[in-house]
Image 1 (cartoon, rainbow, N blue to C red):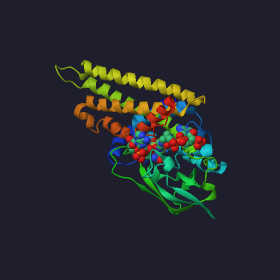
Image 2: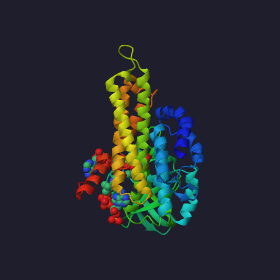
Image 3: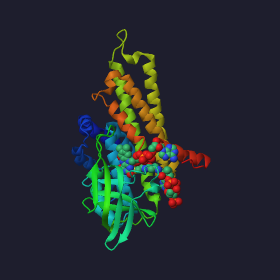
Image 4: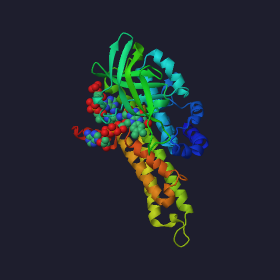
Length: 368
Ligand code: TGC
Ligand code: FAD
């Protein structure tokens, strides 16, 4: 039900506007109200206005959102897994009551600041620091490449306090905190990406999430949830590219008046695409069921994030090829998906990071 209603939402509200929003490098704010009404933000969480429908539903929602555009799935990943999830699991009762119902309806937007200009794959070396002051904590540092940063009402900010990574809630408008939209992106153009700057930014004592004072473990738990959603989302982008290739190859006529779909090499490409999408769906469904049963390991999630994004990129590139010159046109979604997926393969752990995570699991040797 959630999957079909998300598909209807994407068809009705998103597909008519997304190409132009992408070309204009604009996040389509107009979808926020209908998105909030759909009631699927915070899908796996229960209570505080969240639907509590589990991770399979969360995954299927992400799959249909990313069939529209990776920017929508990015929005949901950040809002649900990187902002609502930590508030829900690590926040105080007051923080949950204040933020979760508003975030669940998209009346408020959140962002997640872990990456820094000089520390991406290895956040353990982060430089952003918090020190204790009379009024609470003083934060100094910078975060980079932060989805939703400059449109967010609240930022989950990871900073070292007494050498230990802790999670803080920093509200928009806090003195010493500014967010600047990053421009000139060739990828995820319909998503806002920002730099967050903290200059003697003083947050109150209760900005610290009580459960997020355990080092990077808390941040990584958020990433486990988000990465699983991304694995599903990438399948959606692949499905959209595959369907475009099927439709196009049936209508495009070349050589002897025949549709290109009648040529054996094109059929092989379509067969390979459908096979890879189906394999990814089954593997990801099984791993998501393990997650719902509390049996999943981070390495399972690395495996599907790594596999599915690479699979989706290959399908997007092949689909673009099947469309010939039309493949680069904004009349078709494939080049947009392909460019978006170049971010998706990098964020939430690069392809190499997930390879080495699984390599460490197999051999017991860290090759980072
Ligand atoms: P390591 O020493 O291995 O572990 C430190 C502590 O964390 C625990 N841990 C995990 N816990 C839960 N889930 C996981 N996946 C975990 N991985 C590690 C670990 O048990 C340990 O706990 P404790 O209690 O002993 O302290 O960590 P490390 O610092 O060596 O890191 C290893 C590495 C490279 C895998 C990690 O740094 C990593 O994953 N790097 C990639 C960074 C990344 O993914 N950044 C994402 C930023 S957010 C983003 O991109 C959002 S995009 C959103 C969108 O628009 O969709
Ligand atoms: P680097 O870590 O500098 O890596 C560069 C290259 O070196 C990569 O190929 C990498 O795999 C490789 N490499 C690094 N270390 C090793 C090693 N030990 N062995 C082998 N290869 C290695 N971050 C957030 O915190 N919040 C967000 O909301 C967010 N949104 C984003 C949105 C977009 C559009 C993008 C592009 C990024 C976003 N990020 C976000 C940042 C993202 O998580 C980082 O870009 C990512 O973790 C990689 O870090 P980096 O770019 O610094 O690359």
